[in-house]
Length: 304
Image (cartoon, rainbow, N blue to C red; front, side, top):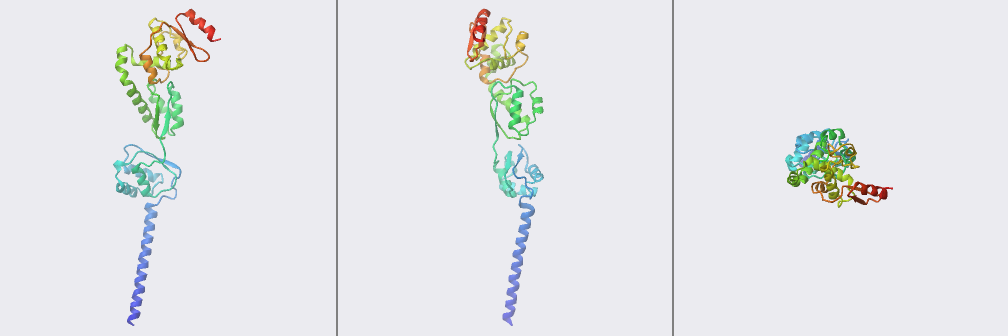
């Protein structure tokens, strides 16, 4: 009788333990499904953007809207647990497959983007419109109209260089980056520009013409010297790169493109020569002339 009671108590104990185990499994599965697991419609093969200065609350709200996480609060908990929201790394995060919330949080606090910034190379002498075409191709969210509005009077000051931007970079960031680079590169020359007696804008205009006129770096200061000398003699520039210089005296009103630092330096430091004219033959070789008569002879000889 006593043995049967122990046997029954043992069965009840095992049943209770089994029920407790099943309950734990059930609630663990429920919690995982409701709060931790990736949503069923997780946006596979997509990119989510975290902007500079955003808090974990803002990011959590947007990530939930994008169906990257199920629970904003759970995401914030893991961000704080793993580090804190002051250390979230801004950038473009590429998601190739669904991730549980703790993996999402781990990625944003460690800056694992799984994508690279776009490399944007802007050669010397591009117009703003040509730059816009490159940015539109490289940056998926590039707003060309807004950019053109921002740079309306900045032709010549959009510094040609190689840049790295996140594909989602706003046009204001693109513009400010180019502008800061221009100022950083030209600032060491500003005292020399002032001493030259010419304005920075005139130097840029001349540099933009030289950028198109010169066939090599070596030619740049010589051509600069010729063109500045023509201006001083009240002669029209007659530079093919700027047709308006055939119509009136003086420089164009604004740069015709965005010159590089070597060309700006050439415009600032022209090389003296006895020449007033030059042309390039069909092979790109330059031929200088002291007089209009000699220049005419060069035209007949090299431009047939």
